[in-house]
Image 1 (tube, rainbow, N blue to C red):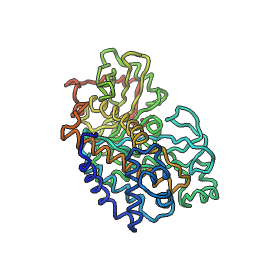
Image 2: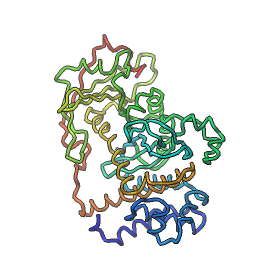
Image 3: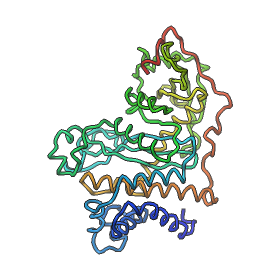
Length: 408
């Protein structure tokens, strides 16, 4: 990273500021935004308004606090600019949109959306806020591209509490799946080229979420729990029918220690019934991943894919889900995604949007470094590298799986 001339970084950052400057009607707000983003990217101990202000040479943090709380600028418009930037710099036709949430541990009860709730980040119930995010991943790179704050019913049913946190009156309760669906619709309306969607079991087990994806003509691979019902059978019982030869060793993509190999089994679900007027354009699947070192550890997926999709394609998309975890880690460690001290709804969206903008900039710079030879690629440039040329699936027993497409 530090081998790249500083002016190359400065030029790219200035270009990004020019692309987003129209979202700020006053020059003071534009200048403060630039200082804030530079602080998020800089060697600041804790990336809150106080320490960023000190890094930027401000006498007090009041200007940056005003930027996050009361200054007039278009936060959602900036998000749209961010998506256009990522599309331009990282977009490829096989792009994957990834949905997941992450927790932000907080003290007290006044931060918008905070309550004791399960946080997958902490792995336990904590007093925290939950943010639902979308990431975009291609062979070129990955970046966070959208965000929504989850508001539990304890908040949305208390309008006085909402007004104190500056939550708009029109903001009503929405499930995490509904927030994810809203972000998918925005991404489809953006310049981002999207071929697939993937998400973990919190979203995948929701039949309404899967129906939404199919209604939007989107291909997907989503994780589901082992208790997921597929035409009256638990998916783990269904996968147990797979013969030994159905399991194939495939890479789910590169990790920190090289290719992530697992054993995989897949089966096509029965085609839609004769009542369907149109010829199907997509095929539904069940998919399972088994650990090589711990064969009793399995993960399960439901998928809907183009008719010519292969098992290797499904495995590749399933493996992309980890990329949003990598985005969370780098955005928190390098861009202060979780280091905010704002409590109100507006402040949360503004800090998070600026943080994911900074994270997208780092993702783009990493691509430019790699393409210039400053950083050697640590993983193959092809989605299907190290995969066998022919990957097969096993045939379900139609006597035990009837009308599966109506329930999966």
